[in-house]
Amino acid sequence: MSPTPPTPNSPGSPATPGSPASTDAGEPITFDVADPFLFALTADDSDLDGQGHVNNAAYLRWMDRAAYAHSAAVGYDREAYARLGATFVVRRHEIDYLVPAYAGDRIIVATWPRQMSKATALRRHQIVRAGDGITLARAMTTWVFIDPRTGRPRRMPQAMIRAFNPRDDQQR
Image 1 (cartoon, rainbow, N blue to C red):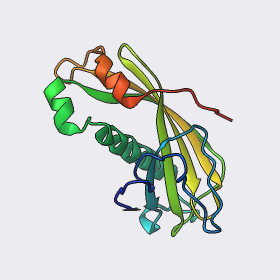
Image 2 (image 1 turned 120 degrees about the horizontal axis):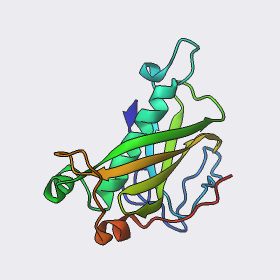
Image 3 (image 1 turned 90 degrees about the vertical axis):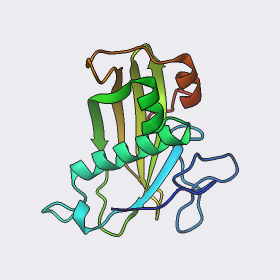
Image 4 (image 1 turned 180 degrees about the vertical axis):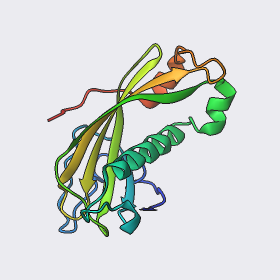
């Protein structure tokens, strides 16, 4: 997988009104929520399985990288979590695979927090092939905010919740 470094108003940075991601034909890509965080990459041969399409595990890697990039973009990188003495861990992934991806496909992982309260956060992902705007997969990850020394859940600070701006989506 070859990630594309984030730049303002491009995949890998938060989408802004008036500058949505577009297909090779210049058509806007429709996301399930307004202004998701966008993370761009290109699927490569290392992402493929024995059937010649992108393996399920690659989608999980992409989702994880997009979630971390979004977290860092809103001010919560590894150092910020170390200062808090807390971190997020995955409790559950739910993924609906809709259309396969192949090596060379340019991919956009759109991600946004749907809900954050107490120690639990729900994050949505929409994985889109950039060339034609087709949604390849939709997913939701349940994260738990924990104290890494004890493994016990810990309440998220309100400032963190505000920074992530959780919002409902138009899940299809």
